Length: 232
Length: 232
DNA sequence: CAAGTATGATAGTATTACTATTATATTTGC
DNA sequence: GCAAATATAATAGTAATACTATCATACTTG
Image (cartoon, rainbow over all chains, first blue to last red; front, side, top):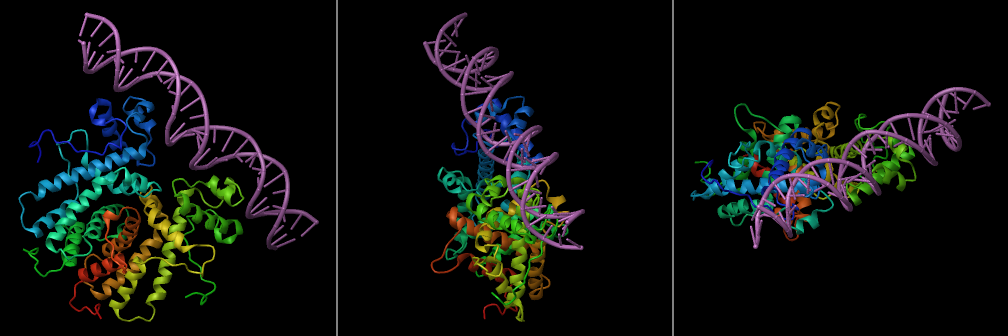
């Protein structure tokens, strides 16, 4: 997937920024360094003032790109979901068996993230950690509804829809496709966090990715083994 | 469950407060009104200054009970998990069938919360909404590890342990008991939030609690139907 | 009734989350 | 190659937040 497409670009809803950061050097530095900083000191301690200092710019200049740090977080998480969707579309291309498609999708959504050299200004490993810690903070606020109207969570819902459509390919009578997929996405993130910080809330297995194993088993069992080619 | 036990008291780890709020009138007002306010304006907008005004006290007095609003949130969520555990113990008393015990536990953990008149200073319906929106914010910070050491999340882990023990009663070979239970607790909360604000991420059913139905099905299917008396 | 404890009143500080203004580069269009 | 537009830097300022400190008073308890 690396250098195949040199000009891939993840589209982000333009309500999240005031000025598109990919259109300038300063914008790229804002994105790159904000990822570094949020990963390092946490979203709560992160401020535009600190960021400006690191990138040798000013607070006012950063504000020309993003209204506030919350909007910047929406931008970063939207990028992440867009990136995941792009990886999903690639990963499922030419795979015709619905069970295989679903298993690949689950793996992608739950496994640990590796760096992707296609996007030099974004460190996907760090961004993944940010998504795990902070992505729920973008919608767990009193402004969800108005922000949702502006399309702030479009990338996330689009990804969920795409995977739940695969679920429906397998069992079109299944009544909970979106619940199933959003449960595994959020669940896998939580479990990775628990594994690192609150191990009593999770389980680990020797020499195996317990999280991916669990969610794969869960989905297969929940969808039923009737015409299940999943075991193969 | 109402007036059976007039002196029930939920024990909270004393690292979460500076002065136990149940020991004074001011303390009770802090707890009661902070629940009202956080539910109404959201945790981000909630400040001790605003709270003090509402309870006719001062910022400094509130600070004598809680170090900061984050600690207050830990107190509130700990109370909630303690309360859930108390309801769980009650709800499972004298039920000997493990499957019945598990089904009752899932129902309790995933269903909508009703008010409990045993605790007059706490509105459980509002507190449940706060837990749904804000409980993850207590551990999704850079201080998790040190706060965990002080026992801040003990109530939550204890509840998860108790239910995962029921899982192991049914299938002691099951490799993911904690993951399963923490997934349904966090999952059910998320899904209720999605149902209210981001409906594309969930599914709803006419005349039925889709969330409880889904998680019950999920757990039953995932644990296997071998010696399953669950359907009965 | 004295001594301790809890609360209230008031004030003050550092930091955050912005907004505004002006000057200086840099790019682009002709 | 130059004018016009645009982007950024420099600086300053404000309101709100998240506290901390001090002192007076009221209330409780031994």
